Length: 73
Image (cartoon, rainbow, N blue to C red; front, side):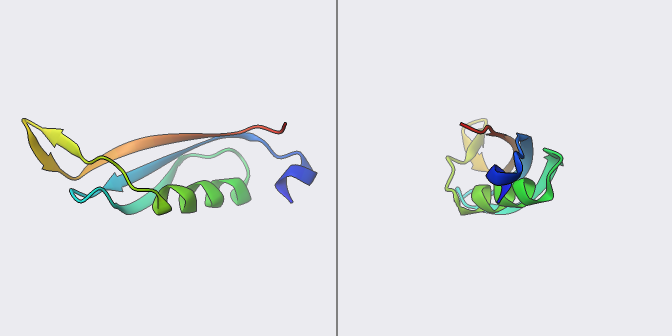
């Protein structure tokens, strides 16, 4: 539906990545301007697996901004 309506933009999702590499929570940091695209971006990052962050060689949970570009081709 978004494609048919010509919706495009950039969503930045703030995701909390656990020490196990799984996302714990995600929220919209910067909206694309379209709720439908923002929610699809949030759901997508929650389904991914990540390499957990390290601080001083120790794995720990961290927050990360994930940019998702919505471009019509």
